[in-house]
Length: 271
Image (tube, rainbow, N blue to C red):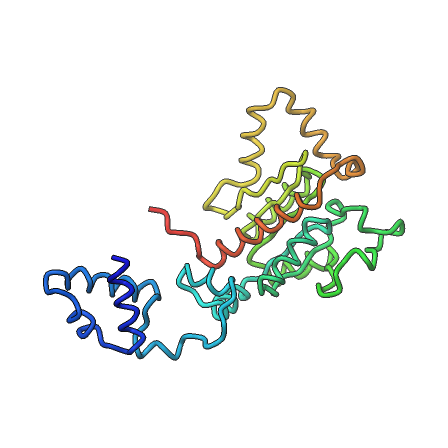
């Protein structure tokens, strides 16, 4: 098969037609070779004369090759992806990395929202203002929560990303209710006890919600009231929460990849 493929590629470089390629092989082998040619065409290893102008002459980046594996081209794919407006709730190390990863991936249609109870206090000064050195200048300034809520009532984003780098927060349940009220896809991203928690990806009316997850967790807890009480005060306990920067980077990167897969329809269809 490899010899046949090499011969096909060599012939294709000389712009030989399919029938001429088949003529290079014994009659008994031609049906198999024809199927191989069609497979190479469908996978993009070969292109017809009519499609050659759609191939970019520039050197392909790893990202170009990544999208090619899913039958996509980078520029139109990102244009489509940027039609979805994302709101990242919380100013913390996770949201900072997620915003940077989105930007590095070519996604610009998003805003970070400052929810007071999802603030990582190390990024803020004593007077409550965001430190100048804490937020990259390449990113837009975060929206206040009140401003975001006013805009939400007039023009809803298509997706929420709720972030906390000091464990589960009651704000996530608040966002879960908003997700169902405004029919928003919602992805919680939480760093808890040095473990990254991603999801569940909440699709109102289609998938389990965050309350469903909490109920299932409760069924496996010996001291539910104690655990939930600790979570309800997680904001005030963030000073004793430790994690490695790589934990944040890995979790944030995985979250962005999940967003790209979901909103870009890169996931294989479920049978």
